Image (cartoon, rainbow, N blue to C red):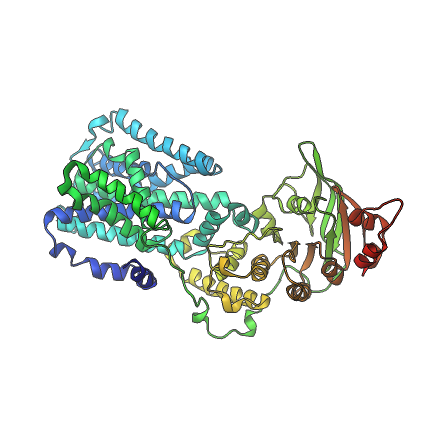
Length: 605
């Protein structure tokens, strides 16, 4: 049954709210009032689960105080309708606004935290909101607020269970509409990349703190909507409805159903709310049996009851055949070489404790060049790259990209300035599809704002189509167009290396840093990589690469910088470096009584 549900998942995602609406409209006519009330509870938890799914399922942020935003929405509506004498619809924007403000206030200073620390802070926030509501006089204290008026539409009061069900269904579909648009946008891909690897996401151009804050704010907004509906439905609220246990139950909805899965969240809400009611005949044992059932499900199905399915196996099918207009362009990178500096590094220094990893390293890269950086293992080459790209803050020195100083910039700001990189150890977003990895690399170049993504505007749709065309061009450029729809984790090692290069190129950099791109490749793959580096150079991109394969470095580089023990010991053309005795000694060592002539000659060849 679960396998069949997974096969149907793309269809449900494709038809979205309309399919759910058609299946749900008849429910009130098929069940009694008791079960209709249970269904309204499922709808409420579905709203909450969809909001938390953005925070936990997409952005990967563990929130243990999510019920706080639920409470803020509920209390806002309750106070404005009972004290402020507003109607439900007039109070709704304020419930959304106050929930969003709370999301910013809590999120901005705390989202720099990770893992357990973030969970503890959100847990504390949830308890602060509950205790505050319990102790303030105008919130009704522990007794809460009573006499909340029911909503009305065109004079018709929404008071009966059936009318409340349809109002809850409308709210659920609205939230589903917006969350789905966010998930399938530039913002949704950025959230997924953060969940996969936050450091790599930042290094390819995603501003992690800002993007996580948006996840938190939207999660708060949708919880506020659910809280407003909850207050109007019950006509009375108290702090007991917004405890830590409620936050955990909402989290269970997301994890049990399947993180980042919309049908999974709705199924999780049905299980969490409905199953205890089905087990009610067991009296006191029902919660125990329910808990055992949850544990068993998580052990047998750790990915959730309805895991998130691949978005599409044919991402470019809607675009038609590729044309010449799909070829990548580099408006910021001149095609012709010149004496002008593309990258200038001066006096770079970085110390880790007592180890001086980079010691006064300086070099200049001209536009259009391919420059190799070589040196023994542990020489500090990757640390130099990390200092250039903002991953590691240097202790001294300057880095200039063209006329733009880079020192002090965050990694995503460095990418936006025009410098991209790959990593020594492959750091793809392996749970995402191949084409999605490339689309994440385009984040700095995309311009549609969050509101455009939320509303799925014409500009957003046009940018998505253009981005897909560009992603197809990059994948064709590196030879991966045919596997665009598979997960990155399913690619062969060499293909993963090429995908990482395509992702870096998607940012349209002026300078591309390749950190040991040939590591782990066989001779045939290395020959293909040499051709790829030359084709990248022909696009007008300046390339700086680190590698231990001398055939590759000598074969593609026009200038070489040699680093040993954190210091630059030589630089020059490949021919000059091959004759430099200091470089030979640094790589092979030297014995005063006997020189290993065979090893030296092999390296020189």
